[in-house]
Length: 131
Ligand code: FES
Image (cartoon, rainbow, N blue to C red; front, side, top):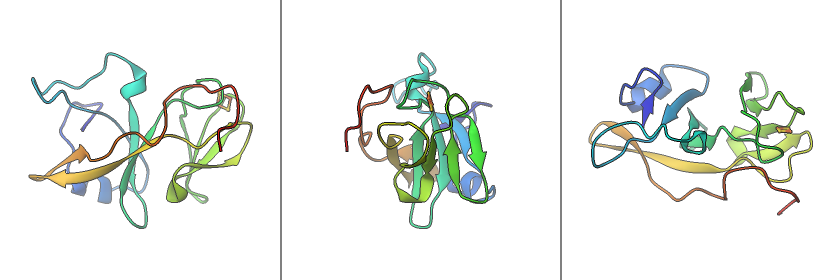
């Protein structure tokens, strides 16, 4: 995983801040950030149990989930107000979103962060509630 400054992220980068960090997966073949589509982009942060990466694409209508409610620990979409609980697998807490925010588990490998699971659900806008 790398941030927008294209620095490979370590667990310390996540633990030293109290807000999500925007990042991209790295192409394992050439080491470049995979910036070809925003569907690859994640907010990563420490939850009470793990480091998790959440898609930046809102499941409601595909807007960029850009807000952070620090008191409630919610990622918030500015388009229609959907809010996702980062400590409970991206569960929808407010707004019209039809499904939780997709996420991946993040692990440390040789000092750096890497994606350690498949995405929890397809990324992008969904027409109806799936759960
Ligand atoms: S697109 Fe995010 S709440 Fe509608």
